[in-house]
Structures are given as C-alpha cells and as structure tokens.
Image (cartoon, rainbow, N blue to C red; front, side, top):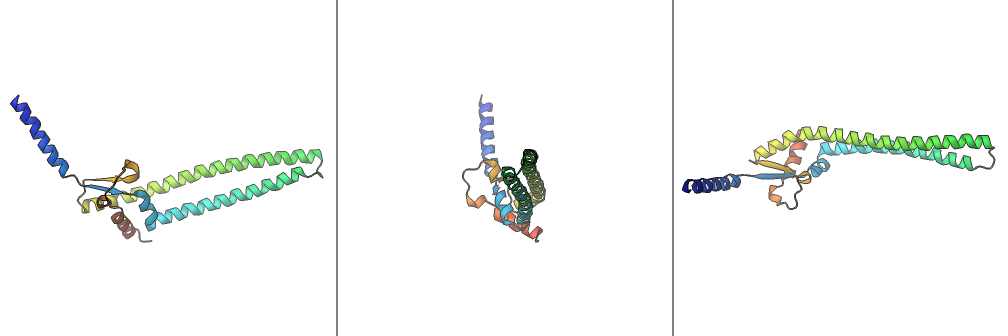
Length: 168
C-alpha cells in the first residue's frame, strides 16, 4: 500500500514539474493575413477577381432588364413576345448559374490561396516558436480561446517574420 501511495505522489510531483515547463504561444491567423504584405497581396488578388465577376453579372442583369422591357412592349406581336420571353427565361437561368459558379470558384480560389499561404507560414511560425522557446502554439480562431494574456500572443513576431521572408 505504501509503495502505491509513493508511486502516485511521485507521479503527481513529476506531472506538476513537467506542466510548469510548458510555454504556450498564440497567433491570430486573421491578423497575419490582414497585416502581412503577402496576405494583403492575396486579398487584393481575390478582390480583383471578385470585382471582375461582379461586373460580368451586372452586364448580364442589364441585358435581362432590357429584355424585360422588350417583352412588355405593346408593339410586339405574340410570336415575337413568346420568343423574347423564352430568351428572357434563358438569360435568367444563365445569370443564376453564372452567379452560383462564381461563388464556387471564389471559394475554391480562396481556399487554394489560403492553403498555399498556410504552407508557407507554418515553418515561419515554428521558427518563431523555437526562437522564443515555446512548447506549443495555438491559432486563436481555431482553438476556441476565450481569454488571452497578451504576453503569449506572438502574432506580431510572426508578421515580422513573414514580411522579412516575403518583402514584396
């Protein structure tokens, strides 16, 4: 019995010692994307793509509005009105599909760009963690952290490392 009690006490003492040596760091990935030169380049690229698609959709909407006016014109005969109505329905369907396709393409492009950035960031984050003697680094958004002491936040250091590695 005494041996078991001693073993349990030894394990408790060792676990306290081990856990007291853990050094934690936390990053805010969203800030890294927003504040680094590399992240802002990606954001601008995605925004430009999105603006181009929006312009495409606006052009299609204008064509639909024009067709709607044409369909309502009293000067049209029934055959022409039917033809314009079919064309109008086709254009509306095409607009809907183009919009849905654009949303999917944007999501895929965003994921692709962000995954590529993440692959480039992970070694830099690891280097910052090693330089600071950290045991573990959490991403604030992914970990569900509710409270954070600013002393463990290494986001600024990671931003500096990213900008040094990718100066453009």
